Length: 121
Ligand SMILES: [Zn+2]
Image (cartoon, rainbow, N blue to C red; front, side):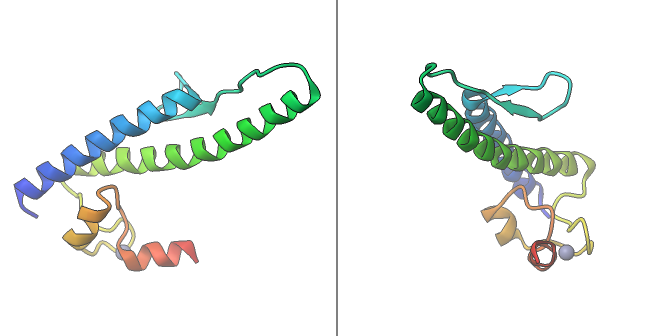
């Protein structure tokens, strides 16, 4: 993998991390003790029953969004760490080289498509 490609991957990962952190910051509280861990914020709307129901729905939506974002954030962090260690673009599982096209589309990919599919099954 050439230097330029790595540099570009690193830049998009850093940008993605910033975007994720901003988005998470809006809906969740950062856990200061655990890296890249967030807690969805509970929003108080009011004390009426329908307001409480609204709060719960809102919180549940935030919770699932927060989990999704946090998952991507962790992958991004992992990919950045792999760049640092010089093993970026190598599948974590089968140790095959991940095609550049896949990395371009998904810079935080740490598994090749085949292993990813197996993992999801
Ligand atoms: Zn693989």
